[in-house]
Length: 268
Length: 268
Image (cartoon, rainbow over all chains, first blue to last red; front, side, top):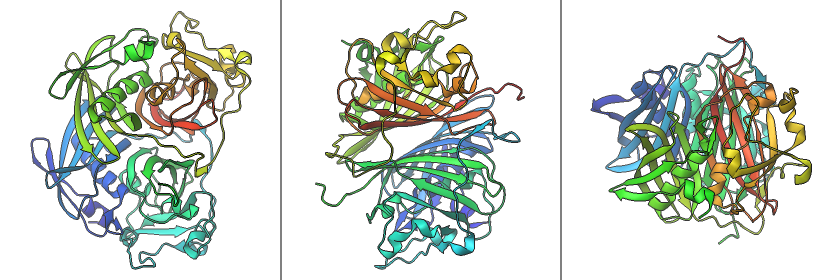
């Protein structure tokens, strides 16, 4: 079984209850990646609704869980003709740490989109991009990068050498390290895998996500994905981040938005 | 009491249960507007968490409710130092029709945003815009427009005279008809009040929202709001719509995204 599938595996444990685990090493400085938790909730939602693809998944993050067993409490809210919706609550040691709503169905893209604005992020070739390393200066680790192979556009990683671009933008090539091909569930992770765009604003530190929503728009073709993330506004301690993921065939396969907390130097 | 506050009023009716009503006339062709339902869930979330402002509200739409009494079942999931989160389920005659997650807190904007991309939608003066009328050709009614005064940019309403712009974009001035000034809760409605951008693609008909997320970014100044909505992709029967709301002082006060179903002529 591939890394990602093992780390998001889940099994029924009673009426509306499922057992899973937060695997160590899918973290950023010890805290499980938000996209990883979203994918775990997404898989629970797919199993509960009996649908193959997540369409829209929204989660509010309540606490940072530790590695170890977790329980998913799932309620199927709707079982319709073309879509189903489930509420997924993830609980650890009696404490709710994530609440998600998962709408799922079957993606049937047309030959070409009826309407499309934008194009895949313009990136240098993979070999000319910069591999994101798990070991950070200062000793902290991004374990997530052992599982996700990320090659960042040099134009958006000036922060790594003390020259942030100031555009609140980051983009790069992304795939699973172990060769697992992307699929709709995996996109829930990939859509939140890039470094926080606050780095590009010269701001370090943790950017805890309050809310994360991902729309999966297509079944990705095999190969490298191209992902971009940008922020429109940082104000009053909150920042939005919008992400896009495009597949190797040049199709838009996921869109994401999130609201996260951040500390701005000089602010109370 | 103002229109909007009456239409979203809610009162405790037992342990974790609240009583409210879907008021007639906040609809589009008989179906309650999604932003109106989001605002109802948002008010429930504010009351349950004891916080003044919605920060991030995500909802999945399960069924279209009828005017009449509804019950809100509310669980407070987190009661933190700066934010609280509640799950709000709206139920009518025993049937779940909306499930929402509401994170709330206190908005404290800085003098100016630390980072901001974009500016308010460029619009002709209010008097040069086109008032959206509730009576549509064919006899259907948009009751919502009795409560929301909307002046659309002529450049984005070509569809009203058979010449859709093809850009999947609409923008205009928006305020409550009865003079109620905008506030963070009201933005949950305003962020979904514009006509669907599918009109600008020459597609008529209902565009049922599957998921809607709104981030409230500021406490709006009194006066007209400027709103814009656009879509990035329509594919396989699904369309995304991203909205922004700016206040009279030129601040970005809300961002929204949604995924909605749509029928494209010629598609199976």
